[in-house]
Image 1 (cartoon, rainbow over the protein chains, first blue to last red):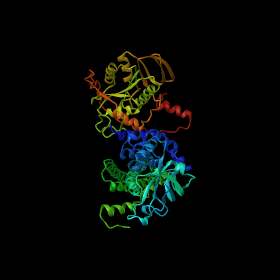
Image 2 (cartoon, chains in turn green, cyan):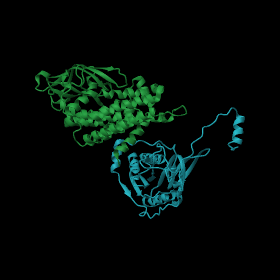
Image 3 (cartoon, chains in turn orange, purple):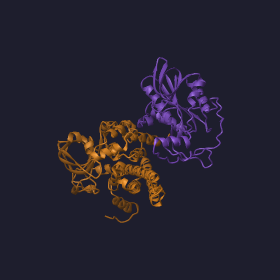
Image 4 (spheres, helix red, strand yellow):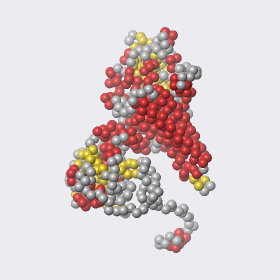
Length: 382
Length: 249
């Protein structure tokens, strides 16, 4: 049996229990999809990537991606919970056996939520090695001071994977050294040196800023070796990009399906508007572009799952998919005319949601700079 | 008690059906296929009976092209214990399927056969009744409720004009209607487990059944496009039109 198709079918069935009205109301009230995340967790879908030995299903990115794609295609917003799938990757690859035993089974069954990842700071985004948040070792503990921003879902996560400097930048030979990864228990930290403030954004994305003021964590919170954290988080980033490409493909499919249905049904001047080339061809173009981006996404996932280099493909998949979802959304809006702007049609909401992915988790220009420099061998462009 | 659930692979009910250009049938090339929705309801009910401790084992069986194995896996992912596949490329008619199922019942000796009232492809609504007749078993068709107790099943049937409650002696063939229960979605661990559940394969010849078609399809056509309706001004006008134009009263 094709497990992937079985997964797709089952997730589609699950999503049907959470119709578009559900997401629309959450969007209006800036609510978190608790019931949806609970159903997805109970059915084991958020534990797709966790090995069977730790209570998950041990499947690859292809299966995980199809789950997120199907949520997006149904009209939902997978961004509310996608990080529960992949944030644990750093822990899985670099954590101690004791950490893995302690956390992974509970992450797999949803008792623990690890879906906040603290890297970006007000003065350091893609330029990650410039982060200033510092963890100082004092009497067998780490004392953390600093600030993070755009940390999504922190209010809906029990654990935070945090990147902090443990050696000042001017004391290391290479700027990528001296960074360390910590697993911080948000529940214990809140009020004891950690403050979280939500940031309202153009879509319902639950992002926050975090302030660390002498937050003490034990030595056990360190993941892997001190000073090697930069490398640890890098290898999680391809997975994140590939999964987000899948979400964009799902968004594009949502828009193309809606546009097609409306163009077939809406009668103007005695015929369906879809018979006009000005309406029909942009939808057909969006479909062709979506399929091309989908093939790149599948290629990236296949490479990731078989352990081949996938940096270029992961980046290209995210680039192409995030652009096609936006164009398909714009076409869908145009096809619907005035109705596209009505909240009841869900198009404007999905369009706001999918726009993020040309910026996060890495912006389009940075991907182009990567391709230019590292794939084509052009001079560094920044 | 063992429960046998026949399941059929059909065109996905949400896909628009296209007739082949030569009008020999429905175009199934590249079409999305799925388990017949009434079969899904039967699987769900059987799995619930197992969860309630009433059934001991749920066996799904499917006859049709080799890909019917995927349909069996769907049933296994929902919670059935094992599968029986009867592969054939012959377009099976209800009587042939009923005979194949009888042969499987003879092998498996289930206490109950739970199945869809009909498949949404042919909409024949015959296989369950034929199977009951071939077996000489009691039957309850179009059931919307079932309770098992002391070697009998109390079933509620949806009939024209209301609900009928019957006591049916076991073993029996029960065919399920839409409102019996809501099929579940399979959890990921169950999808993974389904991969390892056994599926036995028996050809129609192994089962000693001749499945040669007895009917010949002469032509398949799309139904005529529906004409737009009209609005009438009064009841008198409506009655007049029904009488003189539609000629139905």
